[in-house]
Length: 123
Image 1 (cartoon, one colour):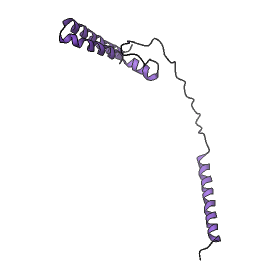
Image 2 (image 1 turned 180 degrees about the vertical axis):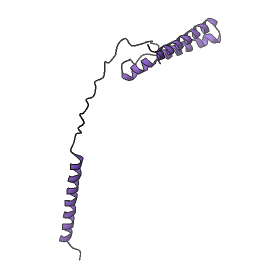
Image 3 (image 1 turned 90 degrees about the horizontal axis):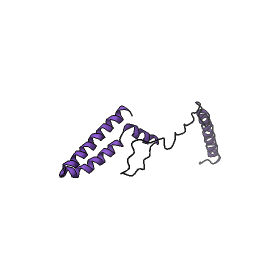
Image 4 (image 1 turned 60 degrees about the horizontal axis):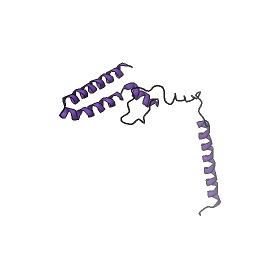
């Protein structure tokens, strides 16, 4: 547990104690005891280490609202596979070669259009 987890856990313990005291008093406090206890359980789920584990896919995310899990016992899915790094080479043809080919094709198309224009003059 790191410092953030301890801080969140301490706050949840204080909420739980407040809920116990409110339930013991009775009256309006008794009605507020159950929501305070639920808030304490929810606050325990907001520990930074659990949030990080859920973000990495290493903690269960499909728990029922009443189920309490303080920390996962082990990684649930295992580590994700690393992506292979390319060695600086890009796939595909050289961009200068593509531009050169486009220039040559464009010039050829212009020559053909100009040549066909002389075949049918509009005099």
